[in-house]
Image 1 (spheres, rainbow, N blue to C red):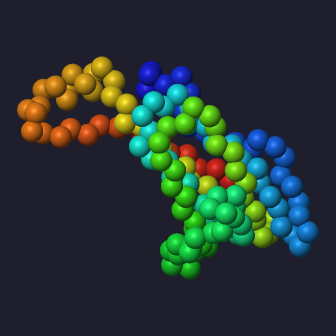
Image 2: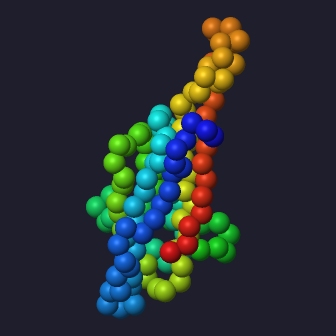
Length: 136
């Protein structure tokens, strides 16, 4: 992990806003840290989500796991030199849980050496994964 100066992180970029009807808007910023070759970033958002700033403010069909609360999946791909800013709107004061997963496929020198030990017909895949959970 020495090749990373900073890890992917999600944080508030301005204070939450209380809206009429008991709704609240959560302003977030997502940094990929010092990752280099991001294959995918996934946000699994669980809780009283009403709207978000992705996809013209429309939520996709929720994923359900038994009797648990609905989850919404947002998949982002590719690297970005700038942070992503977005908002989530909750329909109550109940916490929103965000599980963040990032896969970086940048090969380090030791990984390249290991890959070089295999014949050309072998497709060696190596990656570093990051996973964090946040409550807002």
